[in-house]
Structures are given as C-alpha cells and as structure tokens.
Length: 441
Image 1 (cartoon, one colour):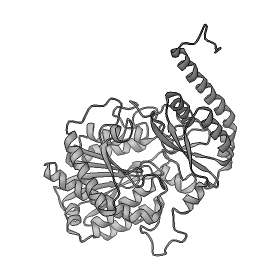
Image 2 (image 1 turned 180 degrees about the vertical axis):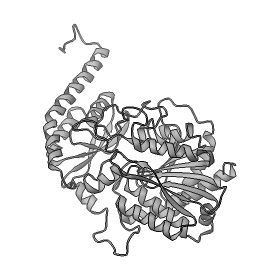
Image 3 (image 1 turned 90 degrees about the vertical axis):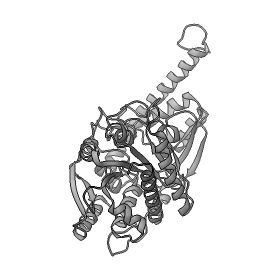
C-alpha cells in the first residue's frame, strides 16, 4: 500500500493514515457543500419543510467511523444530527435532504457504517405532531404553543392566583427576549425546588409538560399533589432558551441551540454544554456549527449566565433541581463529564431516581432508566445538572429525559402531552416522598 509515509505502513501508521484520509474527505465535502448551505440560508425566509427528508439510524462501530461522523456533524453541510456521535458502539439519527440521500448512502457504504432508514418523509411525522385544527377556547394541552402564548398564559395564571403565584424576569436573551421565572409559594419557610425546561429549543414537550404540571399544582385536589404544592416553593423557568424556542416555531423545527451568531454560517451554542463546571471535559464540540458547541468560554451564553445568577440567589433553600429534557426516558444525575467520580451521595441519588422510575412505570408502563449521565446516556460536560449539584450546592439534582424511545423522538404528537405530563408529576411526587424519607426535604 502506497502513501505519503516513507516505507511500509505499520498498523499504527495505517490507523493514522485512515484518520487523515477521513479528515481530508470531510474537508472536501464541506467545501463542496458550502455553496449549498449558503443557498439554503438565502432561500429560507419562512418555516423550513421536510418533504422527502430521510431520517437514518446510524451505528458507530469503529474509531474511523466516529471521526467521520463527528466531522460531518460539525460542518455546515445541511445534515441535522439528532444525536451527537459521542463514541464507538453507539447510535445516532441523522436527517438528510432528498438531494443528499444517494451521496450519504454511498458514504455509509464506503466506510462500512451500518445504517437504517427510519422514515423517507420526515414532514409526514411533523404533520402528525399538532392537531389539524386548534380549539378556540385558548391555552391548553392538546397542542403546542409559542413563547408569547406561554407567557400570556402565565400572566393570566398570576392574575388568577395572585396570593400564591408570581412571575419575574431574570434577564434578557441574546436577541432581547425576556427570560421568565414563576414562583409558586403557599407559605413562608418552605424548602425550594428549581425546574428549568426547553433549554434545548426543539424539545417542545418539555415546556408543554411543565406548564401542565404547574396547572396541576394550582388546581388539583389530589392529596399527594396538594401536599407537594403547598409545602414546597416551586421556581420554574418554563422556557430556558427563548430565542431558540422561537426559532423552532418560525423557521427550523429541529433547531437545538441558542441563536448567538458566530460567523456567516454558524449560529448558536448548546446552552447545556456551557455551564461553568468541568466545561469542555468530554461530550462537547469546539466547532461553532456543531449542535454540541460549548461556546467560547463557560457561561459565554447570556441565557446560561441569567440562569446561574438566579439559581445562586435561591440556592440556600433549594434541595431539589430538575432540568426537563427529551428524549429517551431517562432520570439522570451527576456526573456527566469524562472520568468523573461518583457523587458523595450517589446511593441516595440512585434511590430517589429509582423510586420515581417505579412510580412512572405504574401509570402507562413507560420504563425510565436511572443513572449518572455518563453511565446511563453518554459523556457530557458543562451541563446544568452537574453545575447545580457541584457549584449550586443542590444535593438532589436530576435531568429528566421525557418520552419517547424512538418512534417520534423530538416530534412527540401533542396527544401525548397530557399522559407524558401525568408521568412526570408522578415522578415528582415520588422523588419528593423518597427525599423526605432520606432526610433531604
């Protein structure tokens, strides 16, 4: 085998040679597709549609495939990775435009990457996400709502329950939108619970679910719900990434990040890789076009800085922190970064999480896996749950990854909002009860 190396290729040189070839191929593909990306940017003035877009499940079986896929994920090539290629022996889903299907399939074949076409028309799935006609009576949980509609509903609830509910602004986003936090408090001296949702823009189910839970905390007559509503102070940020969330409604449904502009083609930072604890220590990208781009520095994103400033202001009374995400059905706790040690109260964190998982399963038989982020899901650093625990000092800190496990992914039909939210509320009740048994709350 001839190469630019002098002499025969040893095994070690062969690996390096293949990796370099993969990198060269990625660079050539990026140059070729740059014009396509520019055309797309200039053409898309309304909401992007996904007629005949394919969604591929891709299995990563060796380091060369991982390098190739990470390069593709970080390039402005029009491919949308629904998962970050985090390691060998893992799988990712990739959205591919109809004009790129043949190219991608040849690329997968060339590099012996196992792939499965999950759907050949993503738009058909998107069309099932929301009802064809919205009921006229206003806000509810049979459809998904915009940021403005969610904020309007919150203001209305505050007007309806002024003695226990308040709303305040914790700062503005990169594009100047308000970041709002709701406080529910029935009496002074309660232990606090902090919740954020929709820090990843495309995860619409999270803000829909948490607004349903808030409504239940105000209106339910179920004794277990009344107990947790009235004996704890609830601090809820229903949309922690307002710019990105708004963008998913107006322009690109599958957008994940903030909307900070880095260059002509690359926008946004992953806010859940931007927290100032073990930043960039595994499971992140330093390439601005990547969906897991960690930013120029810890808390470079104003949205993250707004969150941490607020959490610090209440942390002394908060014993439970919950970051609501989708998808996959997980209950995760610290830590997520590379080679992380066990948390000092690992067994308690596991016990509380498992209690929630058991109670959730009883409702609709949906299994939730419990464990650290790194063990149960993947390595990820600079994440909110680790920051809340290690820097905020909140002893019970969790990430919920809501439904589902693959059928719809981030595009969960609105008809699943209520059953999904019912499961989450069961999980909250169980967590708080188990935390009381262990003496935390």
